[in-house]
Image (cartoon, rainbow, N blue to C red; front, top):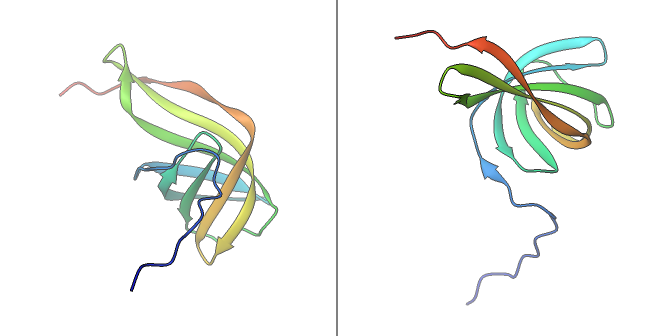
Length: 107
């Protein structure tokens, strides 16, 4: 027996990345972790429930350093496409932008 054929409806490839994220939606702020990320959206875990269709502001801590010394974060705005308890899928409504977070601590 063959496996059922599934059709991929996403326009952009998703990358499994576990990165720290802070979010703000509906007068609620919280922390979580990304599950996967693409150029069009992100799936992340949230410590508080976030409602479908809510506008969300996200800041994702990026693991790479700029010039090997400056920490980066990816800032984005989007709308919640779906939620399953504390797992939230967001479609970006504004092109994400890079922000600097200061120098990394030297080891």
